[in-house]
Image 1 (tube, helix red, strand yellow):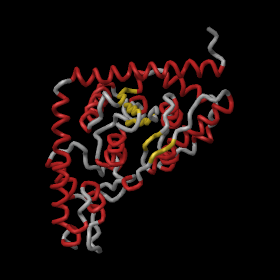
Image 2 (spheres, rainbow, N blue to C red; image 1 turned 180 degrees about the vertical axis):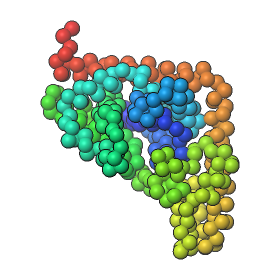
Image 3 (cartoon, rainbow, N blue to C red; image 1 turned 45 degrees about the vertical axis):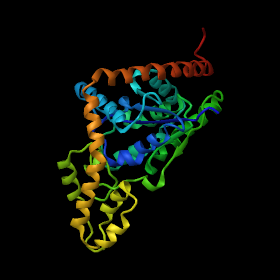
Image 4 (tube, one colour; image 1 turned 60 degrees about the vertical axis):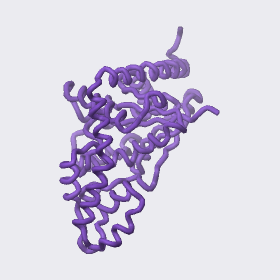
Length: 314
């Protein structure tokens, strides 16, 4: 039986953190043998945040290193960058023509920006359509997302249904896959771990960074255990309840235990990433080959789309 297609991507907009890993990346590793996996670098999405060519180039290269360092295997998974496949933006425009502004105004990112009285660029307003194109281009069956990102897949499903109804039954409706137990990882301040909140523990952190981050985790002195520390710690090992029971109220000891476990978990990842960084040609070849293979799929899909909308005459 043909394996189902799993697709996901990350914006190259900064260092990955534990929330990225346990909320999404770990799922990818677990699924490489069970699905046809496609993992892309969402560099066009990143333009909403980074508008400096030199900086974006470095961020893209760093993210490929991250993908490979955590264990994504180019022999099992297709790794590519969004901008290598211009069909993504072509399909986005086609989706734009059947999408209304009130519908896009429902997007969480847009509503958050409005609530914070930010000046919103068209890319931020329109990103759900580019995301829909990213997903629907490859007939993805499964899209692993955090619980708070389910709307991304809902937008893709709605867009597929609308296109299929207007033109022809071309697009598959993807399903969101959420691993509830790690859907949201708390940051050092207790909120969801996020780069925008500045509350992250970097996935490839140095020992000093780990110590500083953990010691800064906000704790509530009214309980027997520091809940934010515990929530992160239980992601690393399953046998921690006895540790926390034996050290009720001893927050410093529990933070030190988390530091040691984080060091054991992160050190091999960091070392592998450093080794990969020394072979830049190999890293770029992975990206180039992935781009070629993804583009071949996208070209076939867009031929069908162009025929359906009536622009293919020869």
